[in-house]
Image 1 (tube, rainbow, N blue to C red):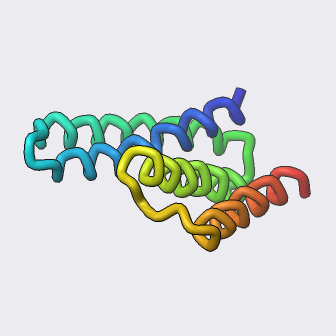
Image 2: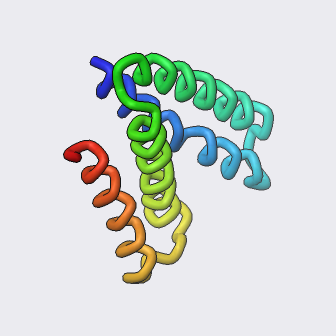
Length: 105
């Protein structure tokens, strides 16, 4: 159950930078997006707190930030036309390999 909570925390970790980005759009509801960011931060932090009850702190933090970093990178590529060059994608792959390594070893 704690690993599920950690994955949920990582997914909500993607939500807050997305909300901040959306609040900067000219025609957006700025305060609505900022409010969404705060909600995502709160849920993400609460789920991380719960997950760390049984998952080592270093592993939990690395997984949490890794999901957030790679997920936000993918959101940027898919929805905001951020660069998807091979070096950025390989760098993201290294993050994923590191997360898997922390889980396995």
